[in-house]
Image (tube, helix red, strand yellow):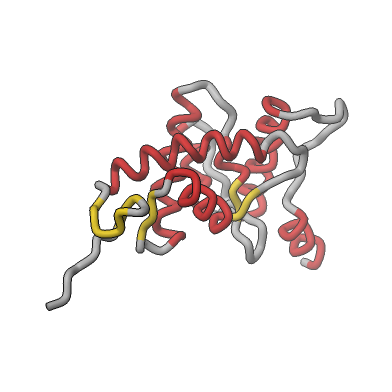
Length: 161
């Protein structure tokens, strides 16, 4: 007889299910702290996978869900936590490993704060760069003449075009 293991659990109790909304809440709280740490370094960012791994390690809560599916729900919660707590958009620090972009999910930051949704990917990434700079200013030591900047991977793509 085979038993079905839960989709979300807390180590070391692999066979005890954690309700997914509870996992999202715990991951979101831990994500805010992790992203505040990332924001202390001007120009820093973190990939979706790196953040997920860090949260799994920090909270002990794991999931069989694909990182991209879990991350969308997680960052939506982080976006709203930041707004509720009057924090800068920490989710702007989370980018894809392949091209260094925040992706379309970032539109929720703009939507939730009443800003216009960008018409192009480049406009979205520039809006994310503005938000990242606000994060660096809130949590780190930023040069007085600092300007919003695209991630190096994305900037390299834009220059090639």
